[in-house]
Image 1 (spheres, one colour):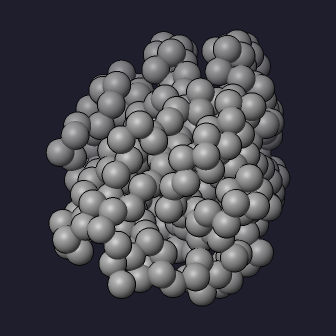
Image 2: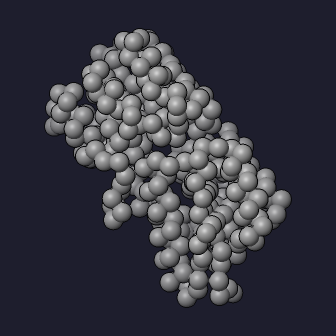
Image 3: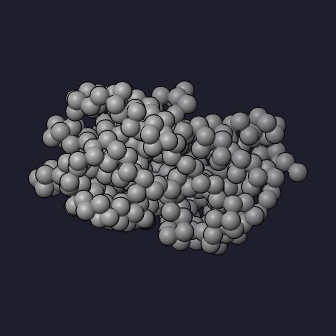
Length: 322
């Protein structure tokens, strides 16, 4: 039976275009569910930015327990990891979004039966697929830079996959692994000094939080950056593989409806994996690096993906379907 009112906490890892768009979409789906079921879903005063601080995220989890929320929606891997045990001990359900490798992060038991109090959506990236797209665009590349944070679970698997793919083709790779946003620019400059011809970055929140700062540095050096999300693209990366956030919103809406409204146990709701269906190319960077748009589109289509061309901007437009 639908309650008259539900209280829902929303916690994102940090402030950047991708997570901000997911937060906005999450609020929209809660409003849609409230209207559909004739109830109130209240998140006033329950929306938090973790500020990339694990201690803060744990404190937020404790506060949400004290607030006696009905559900917590976590956005990205770090807050999901930081809050899971605290919420579970209080018997509070969690639905996560944008957790790339929930098994390695230790937040689920399996994709089919994730856990007693947790389920969600995974934007898992295939690092070999990202490297394959790069190679289709730059077939003669010999040295590739890998830029990712050594502190992010979400980056480990795609980086391992990218390394294996590159090594199988005798392509040299070098890596730079910043531990925090403050270290990202120096890491990017380190790759430039090492004369890499291209850079690969997975769906890494630490790098993404500094993308507006580092993307002009790569472009000025003539180095295209291939990434695991189209949020990087709008912040100035050359290319990002993507899945539509609107689709992710609808996936999350279905999970929240099942857990919050229908009362289905999270363990009986499989984690949804969101495929990367397109490659987004930055219009301004494409022109600056003198790539031919038609040729790029043909190469990407040959890999079975759609091509989108996007302009640089700090945030996604509020009414964007991306």
